[in-house]
Length: 269
Image 1 (tube, rainbow, N blue to C red):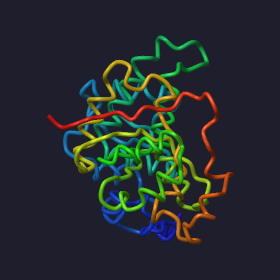
Image 2 (image 1 turned 45 degrees about the vertical axis):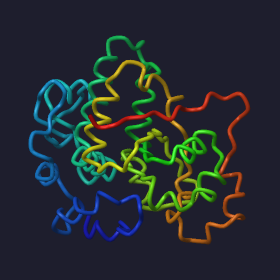
Image 3 (image 1 turned 90 degrees about the horizontal axis):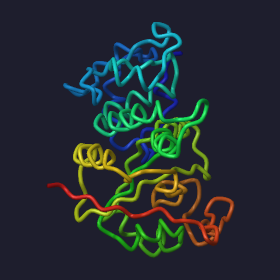
């Protein structure tokens, strides 16, 4: 695969925070494991203390993926594979969160029934693959997202998305979808109320410790769906006007009686 960067539209908001990593990957050839290892922050490790390293999948056949990461630090990475490239970039940007998710997976391995994951691992997988973190100080906008009141979240509180709210993509499958973006891309959001806007590094530290707490993310119900095209500035193929938000195929209301995801609160210190 050559000229792989030309397939990424760097101005898309989803790449916020990942652009510097992409720019650091030199050459036309698709990044290999050795190249990706050079981007890892010093000291990145599994919660067992094993240094994280990306290893070609061909060298690690037939392994138990999550168990192997926790016990050895080796992350199986397929060659010329977008999905695994973006997984590596999330490890580089959010190493504490990724290590905690891996640790929680590991802790449930012996409790899951054969061939079936429990609810916590289902939630972790959704966050890992299709997750975003929406955080900030506008609690009304966050509650509107939880209620799936899209008009309030995206139109009434439109200005808040520039000053009081931020979106951090942590799902590598979401990044992959933005190679060919479409209006109905929907992520699973962890909604976080904070008094200030934290940096990605600060959020990584806070979420890495918070997620490990009992009952913090027990099931998929702890995550809230969010159509990413609705976020102001995240869709430029047409105007984000009233007609845009009336598209029920994308902006679906909550099903009556459904349990809504909570808005959690975290603070430094």
